[in-house]
Length: 286
Image (cartoon, rainbow, N blue to C red; front, side):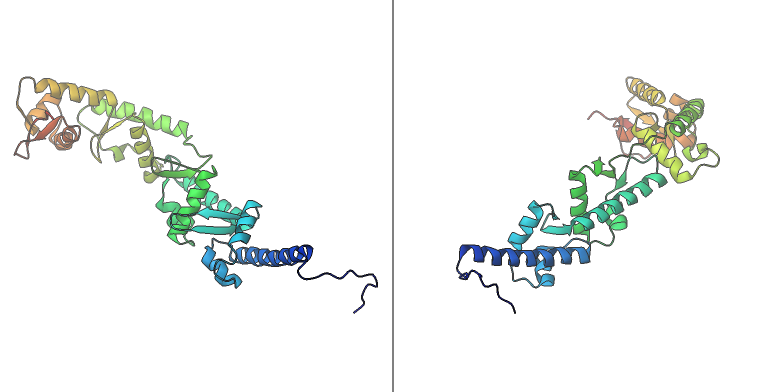
């Protein structure tokens, strides 16, 4: 060992020396914490970081706070506890999630989003549900995802299949208008060559936006025809106390096949109410 002839002696109690030791200790803790997060690549709790890094309980809390404040790692607050993630791990997990959501949108272009179960159990299936839930909340707060009416989607996604939707709308106006009150099964109107699941997504999208009205799972009609049904039934009750399947068929000029789901629709719309017989209804005055 070669010593400098003019070396200055320092006491271990000197402030400068203590600061140097503290910096060395902190740099060592930072290195261990960041390496632990990078090696895991996922989301770790404080307890897991302490155990894997060999820290005493509460021994790395201050170091983590500093790393987060310096944007050297990410803290994600969940419902029960917080999770820590390296910058590289956050980027990989974020891009993986966005790619998974885009695959969903490509498969279901008429759906405005996926139920939360899809990103939790499919896209982020390698994470425990509570961690996946926390990460989705984080992405939502960062504007990477959006959530509306319980449906999750990529922040840039919009239903833009206007040409296909317009063709469906015109197809429904022609065929449902022609059918009138003698309804045609909606699956019979699926265009040739179109995937049935995608077609039904288009049906539900048009229903949600008021372009068609659902009578039952099988039957749909046009909004103006639904209004005409309401008007005719309300007018019928001005002179009658009870409406039966037979009288409903006569009133609307429909078939027996259509009258039963139509009566169920009137019940849902609170125009009619049960009066003791399966084939008869009274006016709903509630």
